[in-house]
Length: 374
Ligand code: TRP
Image (cartoon, rainbow, N blue to C red; front, top):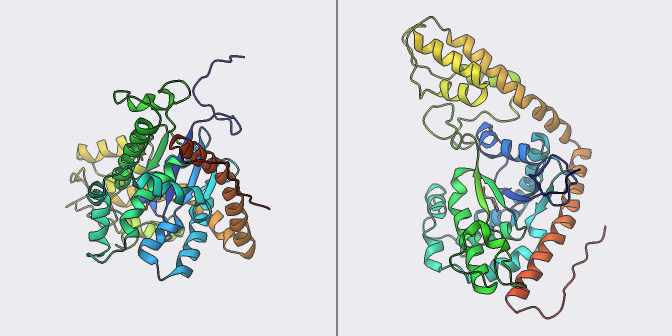
């Protein structure tokens, strides 16, 4: 047997699997196909190869829902159900509840000093959110602060990869800035050391604390909604949800407008149906259908839509079934149990990171231990 360190293998208990962190904010529940191809699918695939941490950003939910604690709580439980239903596996991965990991809050304050205020305020993801949520200029101090908090969410787990949707890229970039600056300022990593080498760089005994994590964007960065215009989104009413019934999926797919004059007319290659064929049918089959459409031979949209709906139903059928099972008192109890176990595991890693961080910053004066009984 080789003892050479190789690429990560699909062994769930391999001790040194590289880490991943990603998360969702429980401002709403209700996952749809856009979430699936944009991020969930990556998480599912990567959870065998990587040591995964999936974070429920329930503290961040208060940036826009400060007056609705019950809703945030219900959504928190809803998100965990969603994840379990999709197939994220708490036996392989760790579910992290942000509010119960104190190191994240502590790191947020420390990292806030490494980011120029005006740079945070120029973060394009924050700006878009201020517009789309109509926050005007009355948002709380905590709202832009969440972007700093997200750096702490990530770095607390020292991951290599952060699988996210494309809207989160600006946040990951800020997180990379924090890691680079921290390593240079407190860990003697030279200014010219490339980001990938930070974790190993530095003089002996003063190596970089943080690997500089990379964003990993999903296979389909922006899935168009059923309206063919906007991005798929719950609030726009153009989504196919992961728990829609088989019939609803078929009905929704049937409504896609192809805009063809007849069954032999060409189809616009940017049409929603074509985009979904690419996203959800196997590659070869997708190419064949597109070639048929282009060749001018007769293609019945109804047949293509039936095939597409069947493919989508094949993806979501097991999710729908698992979700139904979770809608019970036992399901609820399972969720609480998963959260508690995740909190314990997450705090071990996050506390270790906090200790390293405090040592590097020379603010550590004796080890602090958090005990989580049960
Ligand atoms: N801001 C992310 C969103 O709303 C959720 C999130 C919080 C996150 N912390 C994170 C994502 C850390 C990735 C990594 O979708």
